[in-house]
Image 1 (cartoon, rainbow, N blue to C red):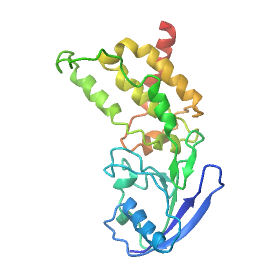
Image 2: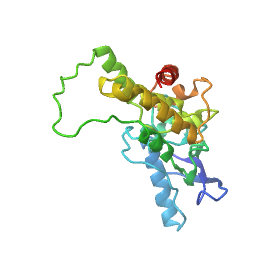
Image 3: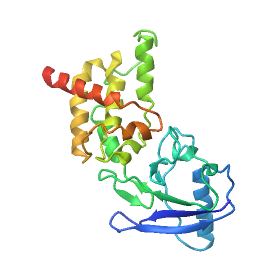
Image 4: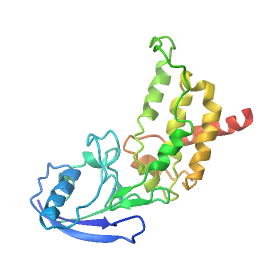
Length: 247
C-alpha cells in the first residue's frame, strides 16, 4: 500500500512550522495509523532525517495521548475511535493524508504533532478528586449507589482527556471535558461533601487556561472517542448556578 502523508513539522513552540509531504510505500492495510508513522520514521532514520514527533502511550484506545487531526477530523474518519485504533485500510491507495496537531491556544505545540495538554491536568488539580481519610479501605458495599446512577457515572467517567473536544470546537472550549469530570464526582455519594466548591474551582481554572466559551454547537460530542454527551455541559451549568447560590 502506498500513500502520501502531508504532516505538520515544527521544531519547537517558537518556530512557525509548516506542512511537509512524504511518500510512503510498503504499508500493510492492517497496520494501525501509528504503525504507519513508525514505518515512516524508520525510513527517515535511514535517510538521516529528523523523525516525526508524535504522542502515544497505551496504543489500546485508553489513554488518548495519540490524538491528532487526520484529514480535518479529530482522530480520523471514524466515530468513537482514537487515532491508535485507526487502521490504514480506512484510506484509499495513493491518497493524500493530512496530519496535524490539535489547534487551540490552551494546547500549544511542543514539537510536530505533540501539544502541551497540561491545562487539563491543572483543571483536575482544582477539584477533580475527593478528600477522604487515609487508612483501611471501607467495604465496597458500605455506600450503596443506585444502578441508574452507577451507569450514568460510568458513562462520564469514560472520558480519557484526549482533548479532541477542545481541538474540534470552533471556540476551543473545554466544557465537555470539565463537565464530565465534575458530573462524575458530584453524582457519587463520595463526592457530595465538596460538590459545590468543586464546580466553582474547576470552572474557574478552566477560564484561566484560555479555553473558549461553549456555544453548544455539538462538535465536541461528535468527535469525542468515548461519545460523551453534550448534555453534561448543561448539567454542569445548572450545578454552577446552584453552587453560586449556596456560596
